[in-house]
Length: 189
Image (cartoon, rainbow, N blue to C red; front, side, top):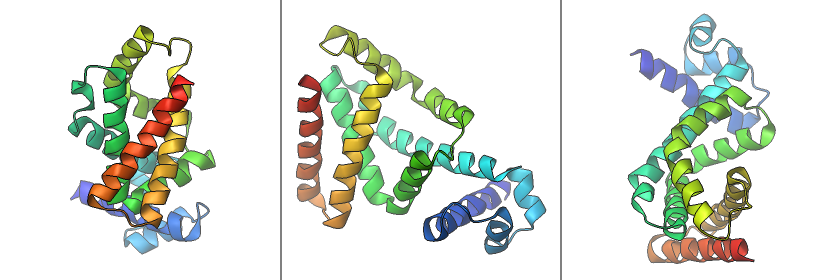
């Protein structure tokens, strides 16, 4: 029951933030979620806490999809990053409003450093493997953060194009492969 209320608040906040922007008040979110404002504040003491909670929940869902896709089971950097790329694009395609919300939060500076650090904890196993593989090849000088920034930017372009063209099935898979190939060749440059 408590988790249902929290999920309802997050879903309502996501809907309102996407439709009206991040300036929506917690009073309005509570009203639309049909919960007393005090109850919303029990879950999220501030609007920043609510935005952080939404960011963490969405990033964790995307990470779970990546782990479920077997990214950790791959034996080289190309295969690992390819699995991460494909799983993220598929997650975004299946969860377009969540992806849009994630991008809005990530680019608005609304997410606090502690929330970003909490997400990093979820990604630690992957980060260790990626860093280990990076040290074996030509990417020894590139930092992990820089690698992920480039990957996020290009994956976002791939996702937007796939959404705009309503790609599915083998056409989507080909689009994902092409997007990753462009990313990978860019790393080798």
